[in-house]
Structures are given as structure tokens and as C-alpha cells.
Amino acid sequence: MKITAFNPQIVTKDSEPVIKLFEDMGFEKRHTKESIGKFGITAYRMKDENGFYIDISQADVGQQKDTVTIRMNVDDFDEAYQLLVSHGFSNEFGDRIAETETSRNAVMSSPSGIKITLIQHIR
Image 1 (spheres, helix red, strand yellow):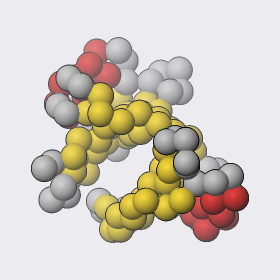
Image 2: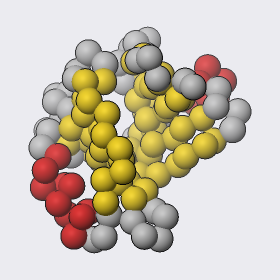
Image 3: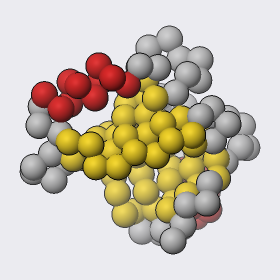
């Protein structure tokens, strides 16, 4: 398994003020993906001039506050998923894996509270 991206991700019900905050810090929107999965998530990928990335995902999945996760893109989703499971992580949505024409992803949580959004892009 190869990690192809690794950066912070913020999950929020209201992306506008979060995007504005990071724009004020020098980040620019690079990519937007809408209507992801059954929750209709909209994801914004932002990058600053130093090459740092942050993802902001707008979703109403029952959270009371914004949540910070680590976005981890990999070249082999199944291998990475099993690696995380072997370290005690579980899928926050049961066994459901969000699949689109271009990606597979799952939000994985450790018993201690670490959250990783696991993603594989299908090319």
C-alpha cells in the first residue's frame, strides 16, 4: 500500500466560514466535488503557495461541532482498510463504503478518537 496524500480535513455543516478562514490564511480552492455518497457531501480541496493542503467537507451527518480528520489517499483501499482495522479502527458507517465513479472512501475511527478519511481514487 502506498500513501499518495496525507493532510487535514474538516467536516462541517457550514463550509462558507471555514473556507473563508483558510482563504484569509492564503489557501485557494483547487477542486470541488459535489454530491458524494448518500449524505450528499460537498468536498473542497484547498492549497496554499507552500504546497500545503486542507480539505473542507460540508456534510450534515449528525455531528454537533466541526470535526477534524486526517485525509489519507492510498493506492490500495482494501489493504489500507484492513491495516486500519487490524489496529483497532472501525468504519463510522458500519460496513458501508462510499463509492463513486472516481473514488472509494470510508471514515475510520480508532478507539482513542483518531479519525482517518480513507480514500482511493479510481483512474
